[in-house]
Length: 392
Image: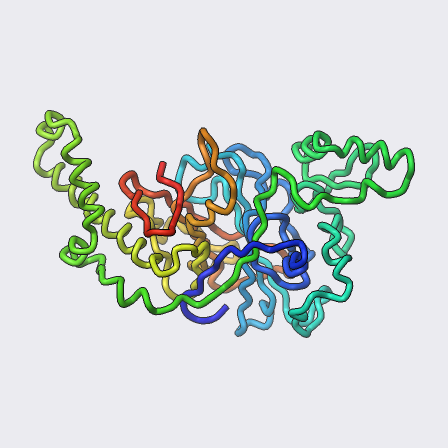
């Protein structure tokens, strides 16, 4: 990735362009099945379960982020997985329903050629778009539902792998029983076909990366320590604050002492300033779903609440500290089709921290750290075109 802040945008990909999302083309993408980079030390089913409900997590996105000054990370991809259960997102903070892994390879490796892949469709286009692979090249089986490691096999046909009983049951309901019967009757391998999509997977998009334009600097005049500037550019938020104050129960407010009231007002003012800065920073490119800046500018927060301190971010297993690498924006939710009449998957921003030393153990997948921040109660006015979900 280049220096400075880079932005990621979701782009629809039709069947004729689906080859670009395969592992050999080192994609950045949302949804579908993961396009694994290396084949050693993939996270197993236990590592990809939600920390709250213990159900399997779905692949959310992957970001190709090589480090050009590190020969051992000539190829490097970050993978994020997310629970499909909306109730698991009620609590902000670390990990919980989210998992993130990092994998890297040197330029000379046993999987990919040293030269970059062509930008044109491969000659064997039919084979490249024939559906998701059932196995890695090393022979390890992949789950027929989610595309993660599938160490368990169908007990009847023994030809389809699963990460666990939940996805075996899902595939059985979706019609694998019929494929099993056809295979037993004809032995023609009809059970080998893996459907491209299913209800467990998030919709699939390519992530297009562009540098952030400096235009926002001309419009973003709010200094977090400048209360006058914040007041001049936060009229809509001031109206929300006035409404909250005037609609509060008068008798309850009168019962609070001056010190408590002053602390509450200060908290609201600081929170409004942070959210105003977030709005102004994204206003130029409201469709951004990724902000990437490793070893540079930190994340932009959506609220003054639940911002992690250094002690909240654990060191890597190698002992090195973790640093900010990228954040996932709330606009991504609009592409995931997760709205429901009841509770929905929701976040303000998801912030990923990775090993500062970029350690790697025999090119295995290394788990990193992710932090979830929600919008505060009053942060509901986003820039035009930014249709993020309302706060909880």
